[in-house]
Length: 281
Image (cartoon, rainbow, N blue to C red):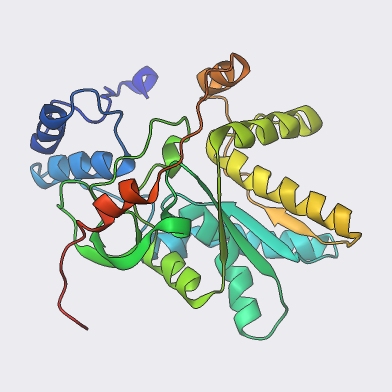
């Protein structure tokens, strides 16, 4: 971005009121998507020449992303096959929804059956351990309330290398599908995910992004379960990005510097109990 003239500032920053307030409370905070959204919304609201376009979470974004799944359906048809198991990594939900929504639509219309697995980090276990409730989409509470699976907008995820999955909430549509039981959710520690990413890179010649490593971990686990059971299943996962911008993460992995994070119930309960009070529907 800077090569093309942009000025990049890490979030939380001292350039917004929300960023300064957050840093005043915790100067060593590693940031989160929720904080970055707060700063971006604040800056956009103060400038007539600036608009803010959210890249995940909101339902219209999920709809735009379904081009991924629509193309995947055609690609599978070209291969003369159809997936039995779908896997995607989940942070805000966009790339996951983009892959699985078209396939789930066919399933709900009675046009086939499949399992859907959402893979998330244990350091930010929104789907596996969050509450289904109304919450703010950002840390500074500048956005509207939405009903979603959430760890609470005050939740601060650990500083893992999977930046794109460090978000306290989940897209309302993805959350609704999880609540209805149409998708499964699993949480994985980052070292296991990087091990899967390295295995994939050595087999396929593509170094995956840390976010994608979560989907790869789940896909490998499913393949090994099929092997052990002696069953044949077609597994489709979304390789949501390459890891060329994440070399430091892999350097830290090979140096043994990565640490796995998992929260006790008390830590999660503290942020979930701070959810806004909403009148009964």
